[in-house]
Image 1 (tube, rainbow, N blue to C red):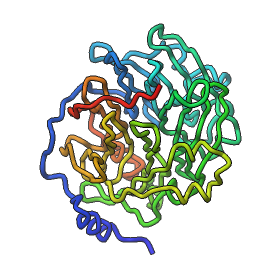
Image 2: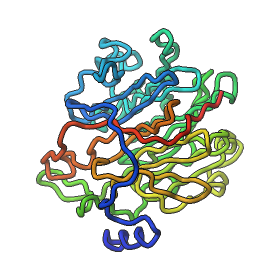
Image 3: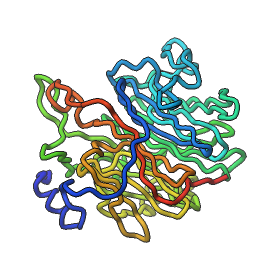
Image 4: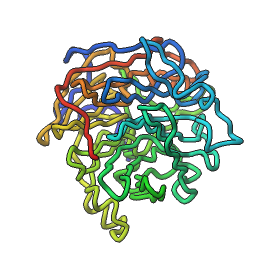
Length: 377
């Protein structure tokens, strides 16, 4: 039986997390504002360059990847490649969900190839690496068909460049209609494989009913019947030593982890890998995750306008403000700040019978954490 929102809220509060956002915690700074399309991802390079992306979910998106230059979003690396061309799926940006700077100073662009959450365009789901020293594309990895299911929505990615010849990438599949899962990519060869597909830890929590600002968050199409908001494995973070991969379904309040070495080892079955997973408890319902070089893990709490930190096995709220209306993606900067987008995702028309409640501008915020990014190279 599905737990009621009220019961879930009571359980959540009893875990010491609370269920309101009345008190302000932390000094939050506004880095940039957005008055056009809704951003999701953000990444900050070692020298302070800031990149964002805009998935093609319904907003007018003239470019899906941008760099923030003098407070303004500029198409990156150029306007031409940002023009979606389904006839050349591997050569243009179709709908980018995440941008992540790796330890080798490359910006990796994660293209879902799934505008509007449709089935991915064949040959379009990919990772594209841009050398930030030259602003030129240096590698494109198109995911194979056995990794990109008809329901797959590749969401976020983390890197360990010490593994293999050129490193490995770990990704989440945050499907809204099919199984979630983790994806491992060998960067040198481009070979990729799925792990924990449909596992409990990568799937929406069937008892989870989010509630934001006193209202249950459900899919509420205009003229249609409300249905649960079910999103699979979404946020992802890699520990400072590279030994542990953290992840969480968006439709859940739990954080999970698996040993990265076991995840990479195909001789270990998914059933045995699942036995090595760990539940880190009630962290709060989070979209993105991040880690720092001090061994701490960060996640949002979109129900309660918060950012939370896991340190020494305990969760702590480090930012809380009604300004934090759906914290999405996180990026640890070399300047000692944690950057995150706030995009009011829960106020989209699909959750409110066709009526959009988002109020621009969307924001890029940051909070000081006195730590740097995880650099595994």
